[in-house]
Every structure is written in structure tokens, then in C-alpha cells.
Length: 119
Image (cartoon, rainbow, N blue to C red; front, side, top):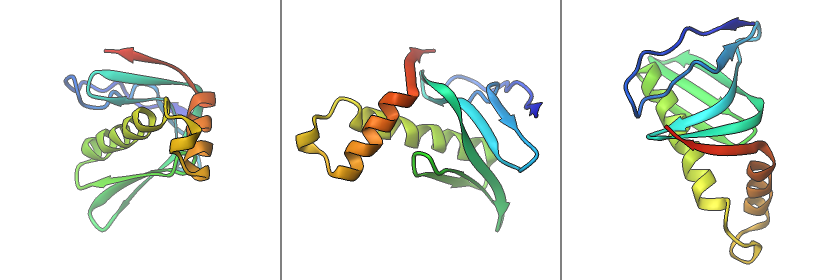
């Protein structure tokens, strides 16, 4: 695996320092970023980047995430936003308010997440 160069983006944009590209054209990430929050994961998860039809497409099947944009950094930002939306919307919800699929996803997020940092 090779390390992707450190991003020089401003606050609120994705910092991809902890993203790794492997030989199968997948990306491993140990965190997701959105605005001033970093969601730290216990183990890296696989995301698949692809460039098609003039769009950068990132998918993270473990959480059902899908983001795309003409701009690569914007697609990464959207992926972080989707993760934040899932996490914040599910993590503290009681079972009674969730569908079985949402409970499963919430429990997966709880198991995979180590902490949320303010950055």
C-alpha cells in the first residue's frame, strides 16, 4: 500500500492523510471528516473510488455510503458528510424509533467507532 499525500485543504474540507490506496484500486480509511469533526474508526474500512462520466464516485459499502462530484475533494467531503449524517442520526436513537435495518447500521457504527474529535 502507498500513502496518499497529506492534504493541504482548509478547515471543513476532507483531510485525506489517513486514506491509503491499495493495489485493488480501493481506499482504506480510518476516519471520516466533516466540518469540524473527525469520526475515528477502530479499524480501516474499504471505500472504492472511481472516475466515470466526468465524476469522482466514492462508495463505502460497509455503511451504504455513496458520494459523487466533478471535483475529487468535493466527492470526499460529501462522503464525510454522509457518514456524519448517519452517525449523528442513528447513534443515540433507541431501538423503538428505528427499523431493523437502521438498528443494524447503528450497532455497526457503534462497534466501529472509537471517538469523535473536534478539529
